[in-house]
Length: 251
Image 1: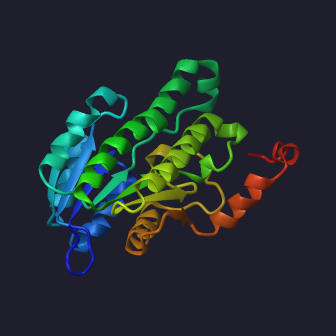
Image 2: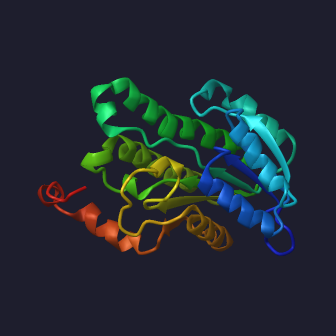
């Protein structure tokens, strides 16, 4: 449960090595979050992330979790909820993929879709069920502005995020009135390991800035958060732009 100051006491990160998620965890731990679960594939990186959060004073635990192993989601995530209530679940896993390779090798496109959409749908529904039983909690879903309108340069990734975004909105509607809050986060280009080597898009941001927006959104119980906020009107224009004109843009 949240403490007397409204701060979440427990956090579950799906995608335990995500730079955005870990930046968010650091902010929440600094503001009284005491228990953090990092769910991800067992690796030195996962253990290192756990160690860094422990050094900040948090009780950090790890659980083996693979987005593609949907058959194992109930068991893996059930272990977490069996240990006690979770105030915030942050769904932060995903892959960018390689557009050219995806078009040449459809199997790689399928893996992007299965990770970003199918795996996320499975994990989100498992967590949503447990949050509903609790009667409280927030599910934060990292989407992307790429899902607002699929671009030629990354339509495989963009379409997977579009599906996830629509799913999360519907899930939020389904959980309305249950005490469970769903928040969709739509960052633009974020400077992370995943985007290393790519030319930054306009209004590029950082994991730390996204973490600030997530924390603020949780306090306000927002349903959607854009990072930076200026992307919202920009993407509204692009979403409604005639297709013939949109195709002429260098995107």
